[in-house]
Image (cartoon, rainbow, N blue to C red; front, side, top):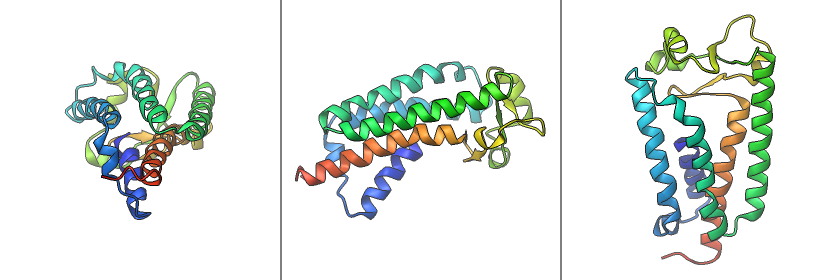
Length: 182
């Protein structure tokens, strides 16, 4: 989810907000530490080792929970409610896609083939819920169709990641509004 965090920072910069105050407080470093763990998992996948994938579900829960520090410290309550609604809606959409496809989430890699992140054999090696999508895929628009080259996202995943954007951007905005610029 590093790209979502970076996107929120980029949008804040485009709106002429200072991002320095965000990095003068400890909560962002907890989030960045978890991002480093995600990065390590991504690197292991690129290197053909899929053993760490089984920990991504629990890591995602820890990661999203780590945003509670920003929510409480910078009073992002309304943003947290909106972001949580996005997480719930995203999760529902993912579950609908999985239910429509016999308990599996089909993925449609394109760019990931070029970057080496995914091979057709990788789906068989990894096992689990993700499978390679094909013509029999139902509700394709809800499956993993947005290929970033290092991750393949569904509409539900994008909604879930919007939580991160809302909290990071809202925190930066709060820090600027409160004149906590140093």
